[in-house]
Image (tube, rainbow, N blue to C red; front, side, top):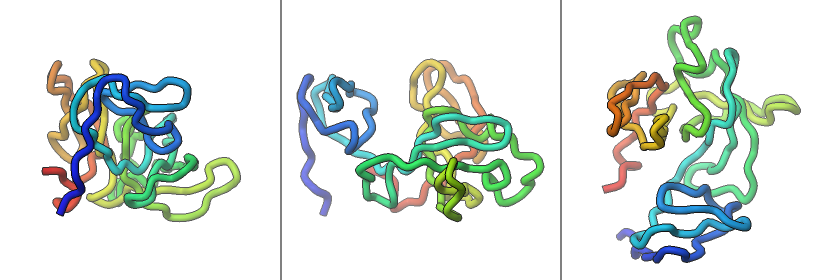
Length: 170
């Protein structure tokens, strides 16, 4: 049985910014997340947020392990060769991830002092699960390598995760 829904009103303090990441319908102030809309509170189990990319790797903040939110963020790196399982030489990081994307990834090893954890998205179930377009709208996956903005219909390349049915919200 699903837990009972929590309803909120505009201006209601929801939680600390250390407990969660602000999403649509919220804003942050003084280290807390507040509701900007009236409605039902929805918490998503998002694992990693891309913070920067270059031609060799993507740097991420690890926010969750499984469905457990971390009290503080940890840093991770997804190297170019760990993005896809096949055609590794053809992978382009900027066509796989963009800053602020939310990705599902697997820890493959403890990295060096600068990257902390090495992560991989080299499985069909791993990759981008949430992305926003330049218009600020959540994009919709249209293939394993593209997402589309529902407002502008602009297509952007991503390494899209095939979300497993048990993780879909109904």
